[in-house]
Length: 350
Image (cartoon, rainbow, N blue to C red):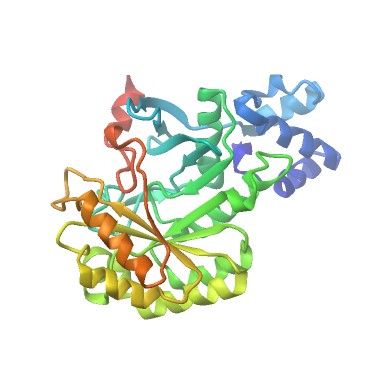
């Protein structure tokens, strides 16, 4: 069965052509799937302007397959909602819905698990199970909109998984949610975070020059970064930063560097000065993130005072930086805390 949520508009047009239907039928169906604030079609009978014969044919060969909401946790601190979504094959992923003054945002997962092996992150615990399809990524947005009844206008691909390790499905997802007949989310309201798969940074700049790029950096020298992030052994800092500079020059877009502050590991004065030397003169911004603790990991978070001093040292060297205000910390919904949950199958069996 074809999951219609997996299809971009042009792919849906091809499907309609195979069914002997005119091109405009694809746009009608596509619109039904992605109406704002979760009011899209739950099944084919909802598509009232589509002839019954076409609806019946679609129901025979395809499905509207959205992730199932298995569990919702709401933060008592800020109203952030963390979703555990069940997928058709029994896997599950987590996503986070956040309210801001500028609109609602969601952090989505791109893989069930992750194989990058970053030593402070929950997402990589248990390794990679599989890639998510474009529809399974987009479905996290649709399901959250249906649950809240609110439109989501900003998307960050920073949940479990490495987006550039699933590039083709990531690309399809971006085109689906950006389509004016779909969710119509602007390219500049989408951010993709990578741990630093260098060849894909250049390709991403070619394919999506208006989408925001975030780099998980987390260290200012190769030795420490390789300990924290095994990907650095293949793509060391010099190679990564060269690709980032090239990306910024080509797209005229600022690169965001995510830097998790770990007590006694990467939060010293020397670390700040090395980081400033690496980034000075680049079109960039540093997002400092005091470590969000993961119970299976040994690391401790840096103090707020130490984080503030780190930021001041960067800015004194001409590198703009902010300390991220974490949302959903009381429900393990903050950066680095999303995971492929072991409780999924038990919940689906109930």
